[in-house]
Length: 138
Image (cartoon, rainbow, N blue to C red):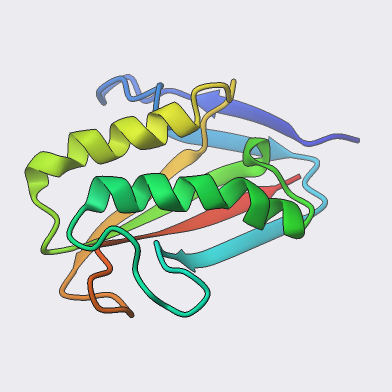
């Protein structure tokens, strides 16, 4: 039986349905895949777009479909995204970052749930401003 995803709105919260579901019910899960700590770095650990959290997000999201495919998953299988930003990311950039993520998820009928947005002092690599974790199910 195929995975069934049902999104649930949160009537007391703002409408973020272009970006995420407040709640999601998963039925018939046969596989769960967790992709942790995806940053805007190349194979040598060199951060791409230093100082630009929006461009780093765009770079990461361009890599994600291929990365997921290597594990047998697709963007449609993402059920949760965890967000980690450093303190260097200006709060004024959050809307632009989330617009890039919304564009990435635009064709998905059921959006993943939003994970926790963490703001931390630093990430693993110098000049790394953002990092995302993707939880996938099918």
